[in-house]
Every structure is written in structure tokens, then in C-alpha cells.
Image 1 (cartoon, rainbow, N blue to C red):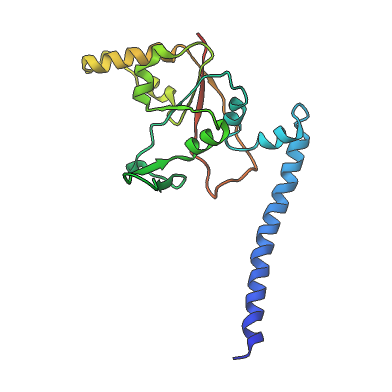
Image 2 (image 1 turned 45 degrees about the horizontal axis):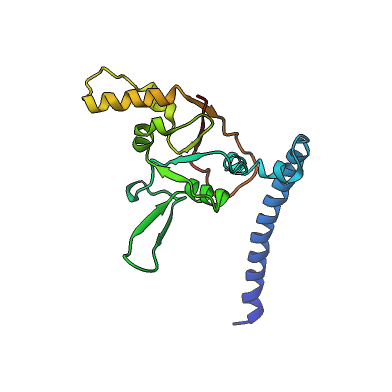
Length: 201
């Protein structure tokens, strides 16, 4: 078989693949440049950073005085998704860990601060521990629980106590809107939504 007859199709294929990605990024780059130039109230770095999916987490991490808690309800193998990272400890007992993308970015942006991670249930039962101006970053939308809340409808005493604790915390929270990002692609698919709450009293 002639070597050139093998290499020509390969070279053409590689060219087409590269051209596809080049045209994709060139198009998005020009859109991003226009978007950044419209954000005159921010410096160049932050105007680019503001299109990152976890921009609000990054911004929150800049103030080291803010007390932050992460509420992760989706964090076990049964709920594993495409953004989840899997690894094992190198030494000692072998355990499986499932870290969502949100957890990874919180750890990355806040490093070397240690951010406490709780489940939704733990966060609610510790509602008295939150002080004014504390922040909660959550993969669980508190509003959805509030909308389905009915304290008196066929609930045990324990469930009623939980609902009262939830209401007590919910009334103290203000949701910080996570802006919709347009052109900064970090995954082939959209990231799972996350929510940020500020304790206002």
C-alpha cells in the first residue's frame, strides 16, 4: 500500500477536526471579547471571570472574613453524575469518595480555608448556629422545600420539629442570584445549578 495514500486522508481528517475547534473558539472568543468590553464597571480579569459558571463562589471566596457553609444533598454513589470525580485514598483503608463539581470548585476557590460541608438535614437542624452575614452555598434549592411545606399534614413529631427549624432558618435567608453565564464553557454539558444564601438576621 502506498504510504501517501494512507497519510493524505489522515492529514485531511486532522485538519478538519482542528478547523472545527478553531472556528468554534474563534466565534466564541469574539463574543467573549464583546461581552468583556461591555463590563466597564469591572477590571479585565474579573470581567472575564464573571462568565465562569462558579463566578459567585469565586467572588464570595475573596472575603476571608465571611463564614461559609456548603450544603451538599447529592453526594453519594446512587446520585453520581457526569460532573462527579471518583478517587480512592492512597494509604490506609480504601474508601470511595464522590465529589461533585460544586464541591471541587468551592475547595479550589477557598483554598486553604476549610469550608464545612453538611447535608440539607444537618444544615437545618443546626439553624441556630448561623449568624448574620454567614453564607450558605447549596446544591439544594431551599425554595422547593418551602413550596411543598405543610407542617400539619400527616407528619410525625420529628418531621414537624424539622419543618419548624427549616422555617426558622428560611425566614433568615436572602438568596443571592447566580447569574446566567453565556460563553465560558468548562464542560460539554451545563453544570448542575447551585444556590447561594446570605443570613440576614
